[in-house]
Structures are given as structure tokens and as C-alpha cells.
Image (cartoon, rainbow, N blue to C red; front, side):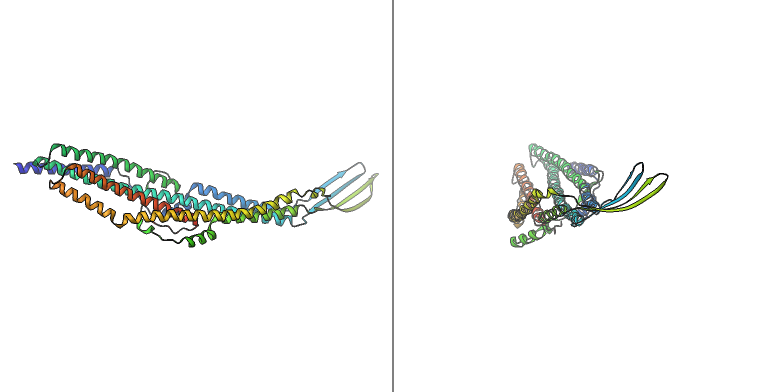
Amino acid sequence: MRKYKYLGIIISGLFYFLGLMAQNKADTLNYVPLTFEMYLQEVAESNLQLLAEKKQINLAEAEVIAAKILPDPELSFEGANETYSLELSYPLDIGNKRRARIRMAQGEVDKTQLEWDCFFQHLRAEAAFAFVDALVERELLLVKESSFQNMYQLSLSDSIRFTLGEITKNDVRQSKLESTLLQNELYQQEADLKSALVVLNQYMGKSSEDLHYPLGSWDSVNVDYKLSELLFIALEQRKDLKSVAKSMELAQQMLKLIRAERRLDVGLMIGYERDWKGPFPTGNSIKAGVSIPLKFSNFNKGSVKAKRIAVERSQYDIKQAQLQVEVEVTQGYYQYEAAQKRLKKYQSGMLDESKKVLDGIIYKYQRGDTSILEVLMAQRSYNEVQEHYIGVMKEYGYALIQLQLICGIWTLNF
């Protein structure tokens, strides 16, 4: 009779566990798998902010078309009681003003393209940060789910052991209480993961109806760099540095345009005039002329001097930008190096050791050699080590993304 009683307890506990698992499965959304490569491709093609910024390039290209416009001819007609005249005038483009305007506008297109490339690189890095956050929340969910399952199974085992008289009622209450607390943490972690996935949808320009589950492994992001190589790459490939150099070229083009516009504007005129005296015309004449404006304003060279100073200043801007790049790369490298060292400490055996400690305490508890409090302390210590490791992985991922961003390279993949 006692054997059937124990069997009933085991069966009831099993049905309760299966019901809990079914409830958790029902609460889980159907996630769409998403790799890091697929994610970045969606960001590049569908991010709304990126698409809006790309319109700036189209505007700059439209300005190039506008700069190609030719001067309009002018037609004038004048009539009186006995005469009328018809004149056609056209201003000549002397000094390559039109060519200077076109080059200036084309330079603006190139600069706008560089600015958009720089914006895309920063947006891609922000999107990668969000992907790392989603991976972190995913790993934390696995840790909390594993902890809850371990504690829940332990609470079921304690119920049976209490029936057998091996442990006290307080031990059973303590294990059930801890299981409930871990389950509440699991619910909160599920919400945190879903919130992180919503951010991924935002970067991909998608609604929050379908959430995408991030796929990827941390093992593929361990990369070694040399500072000297990174400095050389950054000075060669940083888009914002190229944008500053393009600004200097634009300043030079603007100086050329100002000088071209200060040259004389010559206008040609051709006309026809008829003289009426009485009922029949008595004479007509054809006239032509040249108009040359007297540009006394050219004696004021303030605009030329201002543009020349702007060119000189841009040279200092380039040097300052290069120095800033060197500082950013050096700082980013040191931060990445420190994060890599912390990560290797965890990967050198800390995780395995903490797991062995927890398994050993649980084994001793099941044999009756220790108390439930030591099991709870070991479980919490193991959870802390796991969470600290995931936090270090997040810092490492952030440092790697930031380092590649400030170097102008992108080889990251999860």
C-alpha cells in the first residue's frame, strides 16, 4: 500500500511538470530564425532612417543637373508712333563659370556619398549592438530556464523525500519557494528577450508582429589585432576622414568659383529697327553691340580672402581629424584587449568549475550530507558566474564592434 502511495506522488508530480512545460510552450511565440548576415542585409535594404538619408544623395545629384544650366537669352521689343525695334541679347560665359559650378556641385555629391557611407557604418554598428543585446538576452533566458528546471526537479524530489521522512517540511517549502522565485525571473527574462527582438525589427524596418530569433555563436568572434595595422587601416579607410579631405577639395573648388565669377561678363546684342513716316515704311536698320559691365566691386577682395582662409583652415582640420582617428583607434584597441583578457579568464575553466561545484552540492544534498541552504547558495553562485560571463561576452562584443567601426573595417559575424 505504501509503494502505491509513493507511485501516486511521483505520477502527480510528473503530470504537474508536464502541465507547466505545456504552459510555458503555449506562452512562447513562434520566432522566425535570423542569422547575423541576414539581419544586416535587411538593415541595409529596409531601414527607414537609412533610406531617408539616402535621399540626400539624390538631392545633391539634382544640384549637379541644375548647375549645368546655360544662360537664358533676352528678347526685347520697343515701339513708338513712327518706329519700332526688336533686340536679342545673350550673355557669354567667360571664365569657365559654368564648369566651376558643375565641379562644385559634383564635389558636393561625392561628399554627400561619403557622409552617407559614414552614416551607414554607424547605423550598422548600432544594429550590431542591438543584435548582441538580443544574443545576451537569449543566453540569459537559457541560464534562467536551466536554473528553474533544476530547482523545480529538486523541489519534486524533495516532496518525495519528505514523504519518505528523509527531510523536513521546511526544506520542501524552501525548495518550492526558490523554484517559484526562479520561475518569476524566467517570466521577466522572456519579456526582456522579446523587447530586444522588437528593437531588431525596428532596425530592419519591420513591424513587431513577427519576432525574429537571433542565431549565432560567440565562438566565431574571437579575433586578434595589432595596433599598428589598425592605425594604418583606419587612416586609409575611415569615411569621415575622407569626408574631411573632400571638404578641403570643396573649399578649393569654391575659391576657384569665386575667382571665376569675378571675371568680366560680356553680353552680345543684335537688333532690328524700322522707321515709319507716313503710310509706307521709309527705312530700316540692323544693329549689334557688346555690353561689358564695369565691375568696380572686384576691388573688394574680401570674398576671395575668406575662401583662401577657409582652404588654409581645412588643412588643419585634416590633421586634427587624423590625430583624432589615431586616438580613437588606440583607445578602442586597449578597451578591446582588456575585454578579450577578461573573456579568456572565464573560458579558461571558471564555468566548468562552477558547474562541478553545483553538481557536487546537489549530490551531497540528495545523500543527506548537506542542507538545502547550501544548495541554494551554490545555485545562486553558479547563476552569478553564468550571468557575469554573459556580461563579459557582451562587453567583448561591444568592444569588437566599436573597434571595427572606428577602424573603418567590417569582418564581424556571429
